[in-house]
Each structure stands twice: as C-alpha cells, then as structure tokens.
Length: 212
Image (tube, rainbow, N blue to C red; front, side, top):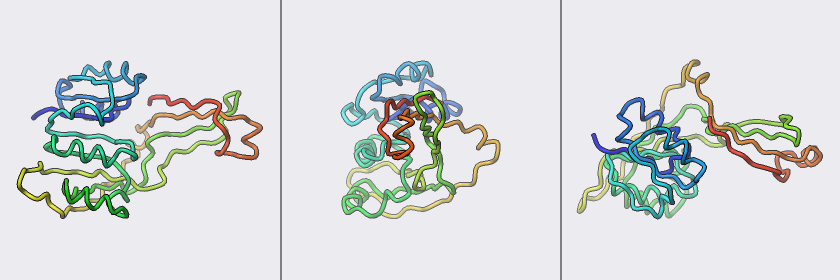
C-alpha cells in the first residue's frame, strides 16, 4: 500500500506498466518537459506535477521507480532515497563502480540489489532521415548493459545503511514480449549531401522525439 512516484516520468511508459498492477490514484508523476503533460494527464493517475524533480520536494512514497537521465542519476538517488520505502532506478550496469564519489554516495544511502538484463535493451529507436524523409540509418540498442538498482530497505535514522547487495540476472524476454515492445522514436533529419561524408556526425536540421 501507499503512493508510488515516478519522478522523471517522460511520456509515462513506467506508469502505464505500474497501472496494470495498482490502482491509478496511487500513481504520481513529476516531469519537466511541457510536451509530456497532455499524455501524462490522459493516464488519469493520482497527480501530475510539472517541474524540475531536483527542485520540487520529494513526495514520501512506498515506492519511487524511474529511468532517470544518467547525468542526474546520483542526485535523484540521493534525493529520493530518504523519502522512499523502496527505490528502483534503472541505469547503466557500470554505475556502481569506477568513481570515487559513487563510493561515498553508496556509503550514505546503502548498497542496492542489482537486477540485470541479459541483453542490452532498446529504450529509444533512433532514425536518421534526409530532407525528403528517406531513412538513412537506424538503431537503438544501448551501448552498455542496463540494471535495475533496487533499494528495498528504508533508511533508518541512527542505523548504518547496508553495504552488501545481491546481483540477479533477469530472464530473457519471450518472442511475444520482444514483438510487443515498441520504443519511442527519435527522428534526426540531416542533409543528404552532408550525410555522404559525415554520416552520424552530420549537423541535425531537426531532432524530434515521438512517443511509442
């Protein structure tokens, strides 16, 4: 029981899945981009708050779950950990290691359990097209593996956060699940002439994201 918060909600992909399992009034979204607001409000969830999730006070919740921008992953982890009974952040498999400041953060908020995808997922399909709309190239698989970082124990004042977590490999998706997965499309329009020499380094004429 309790509220569930998606602090970087985007077009509501995670909220739509959560809505299959919990009543919509328990779900709450925060999103910065104004173009996402109509889609989020069409979900008829408990609340939609437009603004910067790093400025808006975190809503106390039973669960906070999101796929945050990598550039703000640490800040969201630190900000939402104290107000969330359970916290789930989807991020790079390499997030935990390789940075001195990461060690200090984990010491402060605890070590998560890690649930890893056996294959690199496609979060966004990227298409390069010329001025006439002709497809020049496409792709979408992330360059690194992805992991759900799950903190399943609330922080308790006066008690040191745990510094040991488990690692679990998730199962492979079925053929039906793969076929049903339709990621958002990012369409980058470039000059045909420039594409011939610079390929993906061509200057974008336009760069538009389309919801799934």
